[in-house]
Length: 259
Ligand code: NDP
Ligand code: 8X3
Image 1 (cartoon, rainbow, N blue to C red):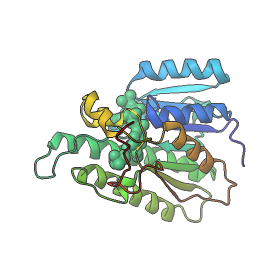
Image 2: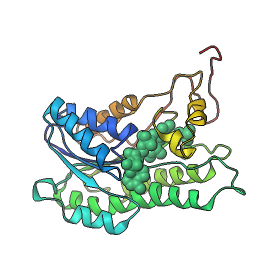
Image 3: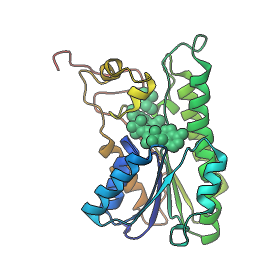
């Protein structure tokens, strides 16, 4: 295991769920963190907590990854001690709706494509050139089982995650000959704010997604991300697909109705 101590790790979507859990595990391992999201109050609370618990050094970016201007400016104006990002965790993402393709809300599509695909591209384009010139770095994309299997009502979300899969693969090809690594971690069901966001704040419907089964936790996923980041430099974990034991595919889950 390679020490992560004092490496600079930039996590998008750190204000909730998997991104927040990544912030915890990397802080515990001694990394310096750049935490990005739109909800700055959440990031500030997390930074206070991590500083108290682990004495972490943290820089916050109040950032909408959908805005190329915001991304470019944020990265171009990083204070000097934070410029040399070692690890980029492209985690910011969301689903909106679970409607049939021919009936879905076009605005939901725009939001998913802008965030999950274009946001990830903007971040990658802004950060990776520095990694190449410093001859050091790793990009870890949070994909999904949805990038491997399409499920009813999920076609556009699944298409964005299939795009993430293709982009991870393509970036790996384009970085061949450099020491910069590309990994993707593709989970099945993880209980976060994901379903609340998908159902536009309908908490009851969101809870039903996980009813009667034991989903992954954010921490389960974050520990895998940390594992990918702590392999020796000649080892690149290209792709991890991880399910809860109660899930066998994007559509097959085992629900215990008495739970
Ligand atoms: P959460 O809703 O809990 O967290 C999503 C995070 O993304 C939030 O921190 C949110 O921050 C951030 N985010 C969303 N849009 C933007 C934006 N435009 N700019 C910056 N940050 C943004 O969900 P998860 O933790 O579950 O999701 C994290 C990733 O994991 C996503 O890419 C998701 O697709 C993926 N995933 C989730 C699974 C699940 O079952 N939960 C399974 C497989 C993959 P803020 O709103 O403050 O900007
Ligand atoms: C989130 C998991 O199965 O809802 O990517 O698509 S799923």
